[in-house]
Image: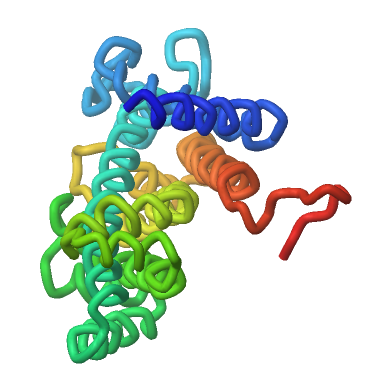
Length: 295
């Protein structure tokens, strides 16, 4: 512990310094932090109940009482956008976490042991990977039914192959390294080799991919909700708000503009942060002595 702690602290310092020097990545990180705060405090900061209908207040334009206006049912658009952030983040974070966990387990075991297990699991991953992601999610939702839990399951299944293939590729490169062979020669168990030596070398690329996939998962959730396959009324969702507002763009454009802007900024934040993390964490992209990036 005495030796490992300074190295860990240096790694954290490198990460923080790298992010500070990456202006766009820092901007993306600020967006995500603000969004997380809004989602966590939605109950306290939303000015109205997102499901409350205000009689006679349909299509009220933005003003001091309703900063984002109201929709066709007289509901406060700002409150629905705020609570919609909670839904989008919940679906994205849960589905990506499940996909990372299952994909990493499959990739580690497949890359380490190889053989028939590797052949079978990777063929299954290839089959899933061959489908367009939205089409596969649509098919799964049609089979499972339109609930929030099923939406998380569908998006998780879509992204499992990505993390499984990435993990397997890194393990195939790392398992022949001298330190892995030395650990095996010293009698380390397979589990110890996988957890202590292989997994840490995969983590940086997984963090990068997971951050980027968070943005894609939010797009998937909004797309499926737009089609009526996500969260059901009266639960607010950015995708459903866009679907409901598209028919009123001529008379009440704010019903679609504000949830669309929130969706765009959120996805942009995750993509910018993911790009910055790639530059900082991926050693293959770090600048060499001559100031050039190695490819």
